[in-house]
Length: 79
Image 1 (cartoon, rainbow, N blue to C red):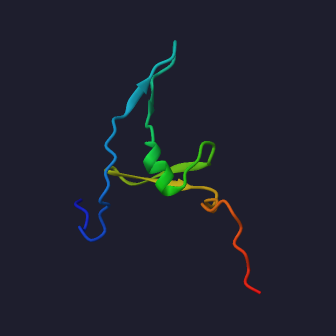
Image 2: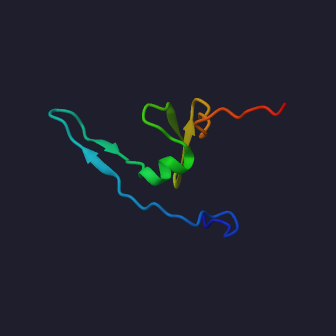
């Protein structure tokens, strides 16, 4: 299903699904999230996520815990 151009992202991150094979086990498929994309959405190593599949042509990555603030300093309250 084509996206509405007014809501489509201007930045694309094409990637390929990779197969990881271990001895005696069925291959597992792996997707790597590019660093710029992870930074843009505030995703960090160890963050709990899960996949949601609304239909066969779409996957959603759902963050299970709220994103941490991207600022490093606390904001100061005005007197």
